[in-house]
Image (tube, rainbow, N blue to C red; front, top):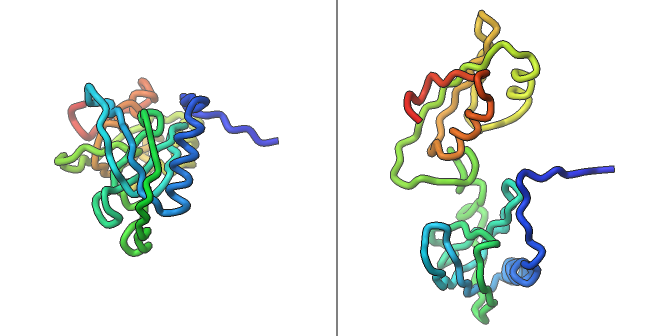
Length: 186
């Protein structure tokens, strides 16, 4: 009766043990030692981290973890973990006042972050296409989005985002039905 159609699903058929160990570490507040092959590195590195949250985003699984319970959290893609083992070292999970996974993505359009980049104001003008305008206004694309119906029937959308990396492909998906006013260069 219910069906989920995933967005470019990843294949986790061989990752049962990795996912199981991540979940055990999360439930029991145990540090893990993981070998991780980052997309930007030639070779894998070993990290000992405190697992904080299992994140599902665009049909992918990610472990949000920190080197200590109060330090900067990082994202580790489950499918890039080449090895993971639970340690005997327990940790105290941070209090809600100190850690909220949603705060990590504040100002982002997705999960990607570009460190050291100034926020960008985005202003888009969508054509007077009723189905498109309904599609856009029925969703929360970004927490600070604002829609304005223009006198000529077009729809203006504005928001400010910390990284444009995931915004540009989204904009391009609308083809000729969108005009980019801001930012001025891709």
